[in-house]
Length: 352
Image (cartoon, rainbow, N blue to C red; front, top):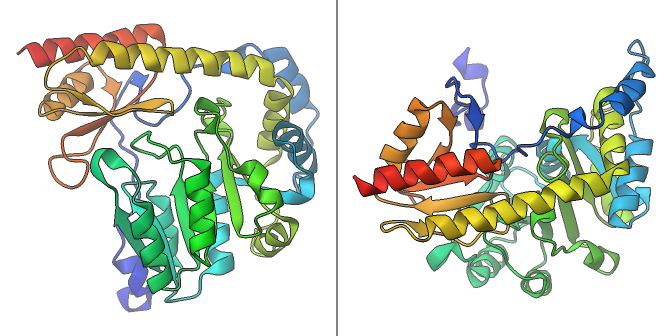
């Protein structure tokens, strides 16, 4: 049977989520707040009105209208998917033939590489500069030398939390011929966006999600914003009925109550900055600046901290003892109580 499987798939490792039994999840960059509790009665009304024997709206019209109001664009410039992962996959399916180059920075979100590999494309990673600053010059050089179809920029970047400026991204557009895809999954914690540039830049796509700042990871809602012609091309590869009716209703409801959501976003940003300030007082710990809802930390005692968290049923992300993220931990900002637990664990382990 192996002879029937595509070579690119045989050479891949499956993306697996750890199955450790944890009580406190600080490893997946989710919101610590379940806003469904506050919207429970409205939520029930919406869900009860859905006919489960019918397919969902294949075009997610009402959800796209709600997103359009949120981002200030007409629905013709918006496309929704089953998480931004599906949007990434659809974009690659639209632009990348076998052998075409796709360029991004390292380290960054793994799915750019996964979907490029599945499509038979050539994925080129440009190692970041010191302190994980994105190497813009290296990306431009690689894109032009390899006639890249796509450049993926994660801004703020996962897993580092670092950012590049809008003018640096404009520089990428002007210096290359590739489509520039700016993944703004963590936009709500940063505030800077490329979205207004779309009106005059036809080679610009902005990706967003409702999983992070909007607190809807369980609904798996991603969306892209681009000029209408780009949306039309990507729509051609989008599967029909790709976003279920419940997710569409949840997305509409949460965006209609965006003020409440933004209150929690401010709490997370304040908690992030407070936790960074506390951890920066410790020796043997390097904290990278973050404009997201997580913190990247480098310490020679990373494995000990991860083990102590595991024993306490706290999930955090440990990147191992090798590679560009050697001895690094990525910790999602949680509630005050959860953040205090992390601070105490660091203090205890570092003191040993």
